[in-house]
Image 1 (cartoon, rainbow, N blue to C red):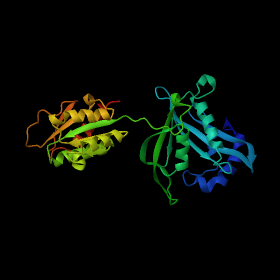
Image 2 (cartoon, rainbow, N blue to C red):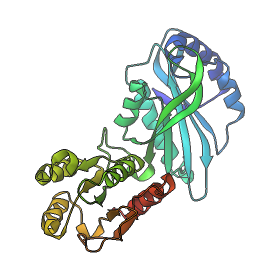
Image 3 (tube, one colour):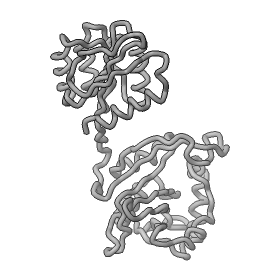
Image 4 (tube, rainbow, N blue to C red):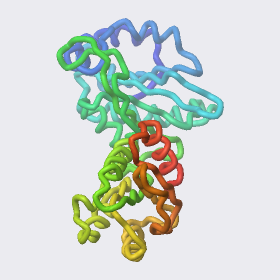
Length: 318
């Protein structure tokens, strides 16, 4: 295969390629045999369309696939969005993946070398499109996040709807990418310390876990004597967790050992000390890292939970 910028001579073969692939492509993307003609008129430094051609054509066209690089933002971002389709009869043979590698070589190459000089490229894929997501992961893209109801597209029933997407990204200094690399995530760990049986503290821990999108590890589940299990679970979590329990000075040594076992510096882990509205702000605590005293009475609202979560996240070890 070879990769080239779109030319007017591609329009006829492209229409045939799209029509032959309509049934397969329509599950995930709109099918428009004339969209390449419109794209041809929009080519610029901020929008490029590349066509992947088969060197040994089959049938009545040589179009392996199309790759659009659009929404280019320059300056301090140097980023773009990437969209693509592969076409029959070449789909599933590895030709499109090879062509996409060449496209990435071009967009990360500096302007002086005929490239686009980009720092970052992002692609959005519907969660059910396993082949497309697998292709990106094989090229070294990492999953960055999830966007609900992102694009107006045909849903599995064939009706147009706002469809969810996962976002995948790749940076210039990561290219060539390591196939299927394990994402490197920072660990966020927080201790929620409450009096025995303090249901409000447990509720706060659950809310923080949901807001931070990290698991909750609670002595309500492991039992007060299950600290080994608690820290083992935290150590196995690649993203950290909210650890909830009733921890006093007598527990400081085991907490320090548990946090270090997880690869976390205890001095960086915030301790959220919970007390009911009718009580005074408690003194003491573990005293290992930053302390936050939180009144878990009825006046504690969603905004307070979000602010606590933001404080925890910004102070997390990186």
